[in-house]
Length: 122
Image 1: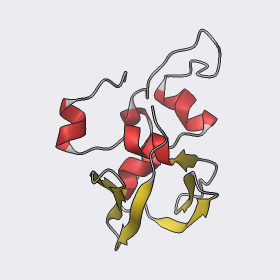
Image 2 (image 1 turned 90 degrees about the horizontal axis):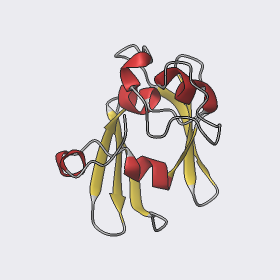
Image 3 (image 1 turned 45 degrees about the horizontal axis):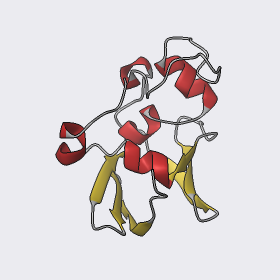
């Protein structure tokens, strides 16, 4: 997949994050959804029910986001750009180890168009 680059990144108040991509696609993410989809090793393992996701023979895909309990009022206390390729959040539940690459953010876009074209393995 070609490196995805955002045109704009905008906080939607206390509700979520909007990214308009350079190809014109628009993604809106709620904060609880982003927290459940955290790409760190710990959260990835939880979403895959304890299986080692970093092994060559480990499971592929995003796993089951419902395996991670996230309160509905989860908010980022801080978010910052990581170089020119990612965003890192510090969440209100204290979690802060996930680095969300722009490629990952595009892959997990929850819009109806992306879901209908979804080739993700859950």
